[in-house]
Image 1 (cartoon, rainbow, N blue to C red):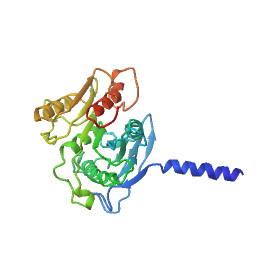
Image 2: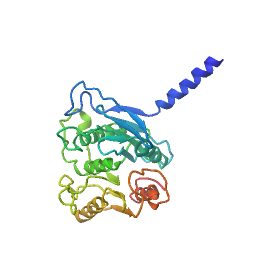
Image 3: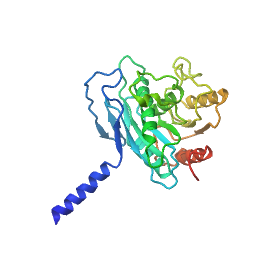
Image 4: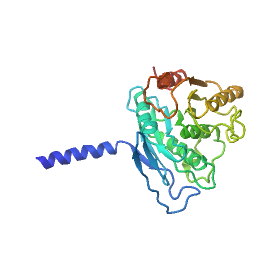
Length: 289
């Protein structure tokens, strides 16, 4: 009897572990990486769960079973200075929150740390572009099929969200299969305290690689004035979108809250950003009331 109970509990435990489907991004080595190289991932608990040395990027599907689900889907990009991934409070927790409001979520585990002799965002952007096609391909078969696909990211992941939503006219790698024939342009973008948006030589303008024009989707920005990552990156991006004629953008600059808070609640008003994001998604017709 005890053995049966143990096996039953173990079965339920394994079911829980397999509740989300994990899909590799690349059939072989990632573009620009060494064939056969195996990454070692480490998780450290110092207030933040960190995943490091990702050489085999993946996407993990968190499909919403809410009756409010409309097929709106968001790819979530954790932050971590393009060195590690804050996989829990800027990743898994965010996916679960999105599911609660009726949004399918897909967690992108992109390559870190930064690749030598490449721009910090270069390998992650390849992963993000590849993921967009794979998600669109998979979304056709879901019980609530994918309708709109957006991207949400934090800090470096916020930078990646911006890059994904502004660098979609051409993939930055050689096409692999049919998924790469599908669009890698997000339908909307949600950068939360995004990093690396300002020109390093001139902090009064956007970095040269941030190319905003009328083809960009609408954006939802969140930043704080006391963030060590300048809020001007979000402000200038918002203004550039407005000047380009992109409709539906929203910008929130809060006085306090710092950096790296994710979904964590605090005494600061910035912790209300998920409610503001939900209202924004509702205003665009992406989720139901």
